[in-house]
Length: 418
Image 1 (tube, helix red, strand yellow):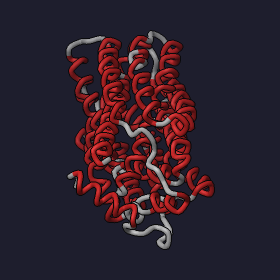
Image 2: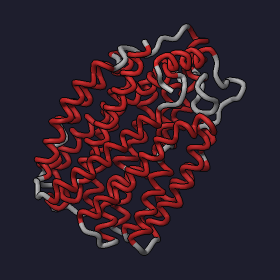
Image 3: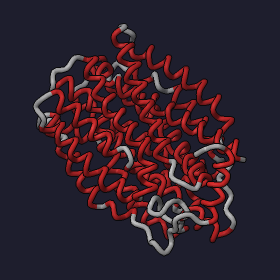
């Protein structure tokens, strides 16, 4: 059992890297695709709404489907579909074909995202301690890899569709190979009491206790916070490179590293976030992280020099890094029987922000300078910090340790995972 759990954790890392690389490959090719299709910032913002809507629909379908069929079936299917459709935006030659490509790609993105996050919740439950941020860190690693690959292919003059198709082919192989190591089913719980303990026995303050059907209201509050946080993340994904190119006058190669800086900072933050959450709780991660992100994006919006922009994107990424994993984890642990559906609610509304929200930045950039439009993100980060209290848990319910956590620690020690 310990060996299979360890393998399942590694496989989860693989899918998060895969997803980050596939999505990052689309992101870093946005400037080239924008030029090829002859669209402006405002039109691009509108087309990103299509991508967001596709992802939202895919998530709502994938959540209940994952609860019914299991992550071992849905996760690899999502990985293959996402890889197969990656090259479609690179083939677009006008706004209509780009919209169709983004709709299909978004549907497949949503399926992979919800299913792999649901599997991550199951792995975290089996471990009995926070591990969710580590998975999201590897998603950011994928973004860094995509930025590096795009810089190389752009320098070589490779057509975006060819570069994206090659990455998709690699993704298909990875998705199929990693599938065998996934958990066959969610960790078993012994009745209601065991279910509550399994959700609550994670380190105090790191997740919501399992609450069954009564958790629905709080899950939707988590979803609203996810909407704001992921709108900010989506803005960095879709506009960071264009900000360096259009506002700061950077070259195409240097502009690609704006997103790389943000993604690298996200990676570092998420590698540290599980330990910080175990010590100080998820509320602290969300509140102080959102405040740091507000400072960073303000530097981007108002800073007059290139180094202030890179510093701002780094602080923005570091601050946001731990926020989304805490929200996803809390939703997944709210009710083990509907983990997929709850994750789909939070992820779905969050990705409406991540993929459709940047449209707002595009529309604002049509009215004001692009960097000034980022002030909206400052306001959203401040609001998120103020609303972080939704993660506050009842001390009488959440205990440090407990039998479930003790069993997991003992099994982990035997397996050699410290």
